[in-house]
Image 1: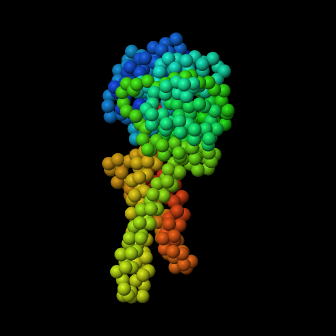
Image 2: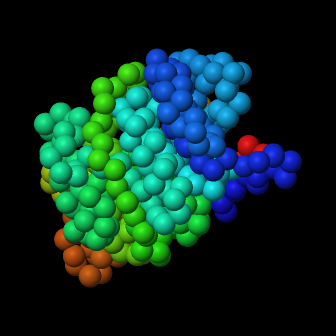
Length: 392
């Protein structure tokens, strides 16, 4: 269930524009970023909402101090949640403005471009306006390899989704509230490419505009780009390309499961060789059957453990478990997957003994068939969504 904070009836005149800034450990830059963009937009009624993922530095303190002299600045701190896309969605859900926007908190987005976007969207003849690094021959502000990667991702996005934007990877854009609400039910909220998520989730072909803008030097914080961001993007593309049939998080879960299959196969091969290689003659009639149970069970257990820790790092990193929660989550994962493990074990033995399928093929096939159950059960018991408190 989606929780959307209602706009207070007594809130007074609502701002025209709500600009969301998503932060994680950007205390060194956030004050100057807010002051600069707020001054640039001073002729426009606006609010700035900082959605902070419980930064370990002074980000929240800087925003609260600034809010004392700038009443249009708001702070929302999320605990046990991570990710720019989900943070932007949270900000828009609690925003008061008729128009909604997002920008980074590290100072890379040019305030002049933000002003141009605001003026363009406020005219009322556009649904979506974006800052683009790829209009004309402008410098992107990225290093060679990051620029190459961004262009490759942009090409893949246009090829798969046909999104009519020159820079669907842009992290700075604005839209009407109506356009946002049209996309809201299908937003994935995974990863960092929120523009792609919004544009691919709305059934409306937007009237859109773009502003030429390169990224500036980062004033603080550090890049969030890593291999997990690339995996998130790939999973999001698959979800949108399949019309939501393949959920992005399930795509990641399944991808981790593939690595778990290799762990499973390796353990199964090693243990099988050790047990069968050591036995010249069976000591009793059912020795081989017990050896099968041991080898399959050990392979299942170790692959489950592998899958849990990799899923915690990649698939559910926005809900990453730490400390005691990591232990209880692992126990919950074992319990959630226990039925799948029993199914996998039973199918493995059945296919090997009765269908005479090779033991490796039987084991891998059974593991794949149980993966769908494992995803839904582990999502429910290990990384379940927490219901927000009213007014949170």
